[in-house]
Structure formats: structure tokens, C-alpha cells
Length: 281
Figure 1 (cartoon, rainbow, N blue to C red):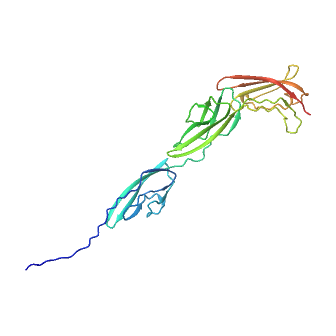
Figure 2: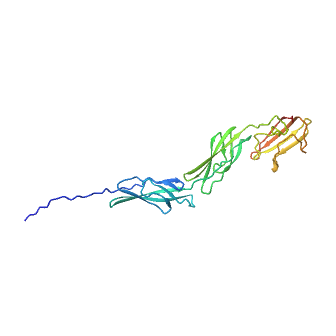
Figure 3: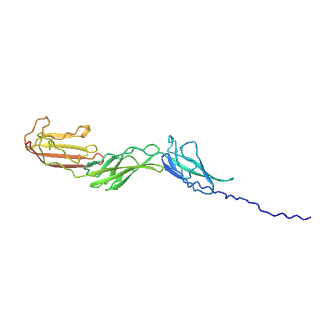
């Protein structure tokens, strides 16, 4: 006896997912937005225990980790799993988190006279895991040590010079600028010490008292030195206010000044002299 069987069965075929967690990345700070590529089925992130905040079902979830790590940077693996029924695939991405750079300072903007075209720079010091570097933004300059926060810059230009101090840790970077305006020495042609706070003393613009040795002598019409001041050997510079060395007011008239500026760094000496009028009224 022959028997014939006919019929059909329905089979559901599930596509095998291919998980793609995205490329490895480096970030500055404790946060990152992951970038898995959605495929077949549903996806789920698996995080290391250092993660404090996340949404594991979102392919582009934003993750925050515990930022209290002692090293310059830390690297963690994040796993993206895609499941389509019983078909599962998993991929990983490595994220490197670097500590941010905080609070740098290139120094205070200044205007000064420099006849040897040389000035010191003093920026904030980088931390042990950070690196620093000087660069010229405008003007000119050659740094004695481009990576030292304290260095000299040579061959600076007259006018405005802008220098940048950059501190880095991995991909973290912070920058600050310092402006150095190199000017010609400006010596007033007269003073009027009458208490009105206008030209009451001889203020010489452009002197770099912190880095140069300055000596000034005032001589009367008879050729007698009546006043002198200097910052040599730690002495305090005092602007001439129309009095002699004993603090007695000098008579009105025309006086002669002799100024000597010395660069301790290069040994160069620049003298300058001229007349100045003392008039109180």
C-alpha cells in the first residue's frame, strides 16, 4: 500500500547581526558619547564599573566615568552587543580619558624698553604629567627653551609681540597669551611737583626695573649732582620729585639727567642724557 504525504512548514530565518561598537577614541575629561552602528536586532552596552552615568540601550549613549583617577589618563573597553533572537554578536571599543588641563597663565602683559631685544618670560608651571610649549603669535622671538615655563626670548621686535603658552596632556590642551609691547624710552621734558598729581615726579616710561640695572643722576646748572637713584644691588628705585638727596626742594630751573641702563643677561650698557625743566607753578 503506497502512502503520499504533502504539506508545508513555515521556517523563520533570523539574520545574524554584526555588531559595530565604533572606532577607538580619545577624549579630554570624564565624558564621552559612544557611537555604535545600529544593525539587526536590539543593542545593549556593557560598561566597566567606573561608569557613573549612562543609558545602556542607546547606541549613541553619553557616558561619564569617575574622574578621580591618579594617572594622566585611563583607558577602558566598552562592549556593544547586538541580539537578533538567538543570534548574538559583540564588538568592543576602547576609550582613553585624559585629565583636563586647568588654570594656566602665560604671564602679565607688559610694556618696556629693551635695547638688547631680550626679555624673560615666566608662565605657570605644568604639572608633572603635562607638557608646555611657547610659540610666537605675532611679532618675533627666539626662545632659549621652548618647553620651559621660565625662559628668555631673544630677537624680539619693536612694537607688539604676542607669545602663546600651551599646556597639553594627551589631547587635552589649554592656551594663554602674553603681550609684550617693546617701546622706545620715553623721558619727560619737565616735571611740576606742586601736589596736583600731574607730572609731580620724573616717570621714565619703558624701564624694565625687574630685569635691568638702572642708574639715574640729576645734575644742576653748576654741574653738581643733586640727586641719584638706582635699583642696583637690590636698592629701591625712587622717581625724582624735584628734591635733592636730603629731601630738600630744589629751585626751579633747568637740570641735566644722566641715565645708564645695563642688561645683566648680555652685559650691554646704554647711556642716555638730556635736559629736564623743574617748574612748580
